[in-house]
Image 1 (cartoon, rainbow, N blue to C red):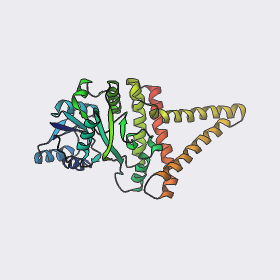
Image 2: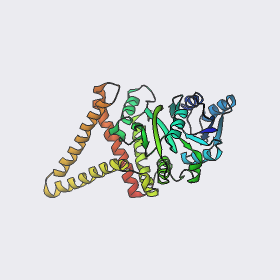
Image 3: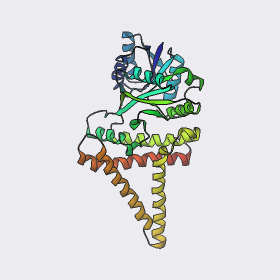
Image 4: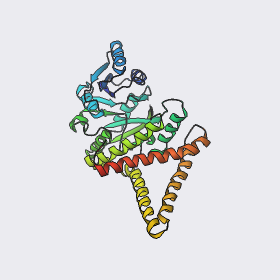
Length: 331
């Protein structure tokens, strides 16, 4: 029996060697391993690095993904995979040596169709900026308690970096290629709707690298928020309430600002502007408390900086959703 890793890539020269090495370091006994690197025609040294690995180990194959985007890579991988089981793994992530075997074992044990390990957020480098991004993305307040980054062990509504039984994904028509992001949420929901179970095991883990700069973090937030709106248009059930809390937050701020300005010029009162300031102050206060609950780093530095990072992240995330709901387009 074969298990096939499907890993989409595009210009991943900084990470791909370490990622492939973590694939090759897997310890397993229930299957043979195949590794498909589905590359979106990278313009850096990614393809060169993968080709060098493939010449040394015939388990590795470089597969072209001319359309570049992630769902196309997944579907190409599903067609090319020789395995009865597949693992959808990311190039920005390191995996424990027992990751595949543990996920496979608990998939069988729990009678699930998909199983993933615990996801640990790990800074891309040791800079203060990267460490603060790590703390933000590892906080339940930052990313919600329903995020895969803070998911508990047990049956879950979604799995990231999972092992799946391949044929079921094929029977469901593969990944939705309209969804450049959130295609995993869409697939997870379709699996649940079809009566299958998903499981997260803490018997193994992987290390996910979040954006390493504030600029990249805010762009990540805006893009994810935007794609939540698009995903809602395409498959409403794949989106849950926690995906839209930043949208409600930003909408409230904008409404209070507009009404507050009108109130000031008409009635010469500032009740709504005061309420607006109170909401922002409350968000910052909760951010301070949440920052002190995060591990590592200087508590004082985190208490000063993280609340504003939380606020910026949530605003950009919600603004991305709101703007896309209004324009019904993604740019």
